[in-house]
Amino acid sequence: GILYPLFYGCGFIVISIFFGLYFFQDKLLYFPSMPYGTKSPDLNPIGFRSPSDFDLDYEDLFLRSKDGTKVHGWLIKQKNHKNVPTILYFHGNAGNIGFRLMNAKAMYDELKCNLILAEYRGYGKSDGVPNEEAMI
Image (cartoon, rainbow, N blue to C red; front, side, top):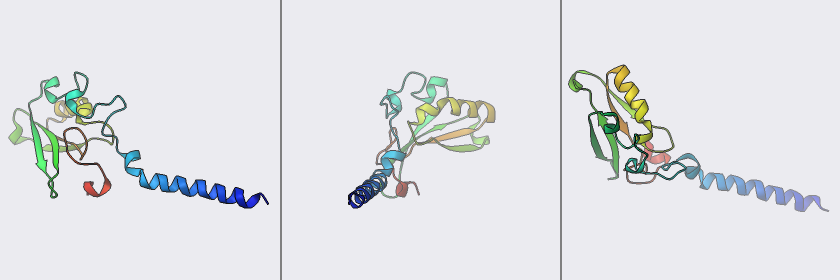
């Protein structure tokens, strides 16, 4: 009858969906570019390009991971930066650190701390490809 082809067809569809989810999970989790396409903070709208948009003193940081991948971040410093704590800030899974500048400005003003805004591999000015293994 008709039940066997229907059963196998549905099984094939379900298995295909699971394989698709498994093999494309990184693409479903990590979004280095926002929907309108800016990967680098330099291409963000004005006000989201660098801490200098908020008159914040900062340094561009470029660090090398164990495997040699270049990772980018910003060090935003208070005037008395040697006498205050530093918070390491990792943004969410979409966009780049430029889109977190309003959060950084609020922490800078309210907490009176230094901030390191770190980008993941493949985000912003960082090299590489985002994946779970590289984050650990």
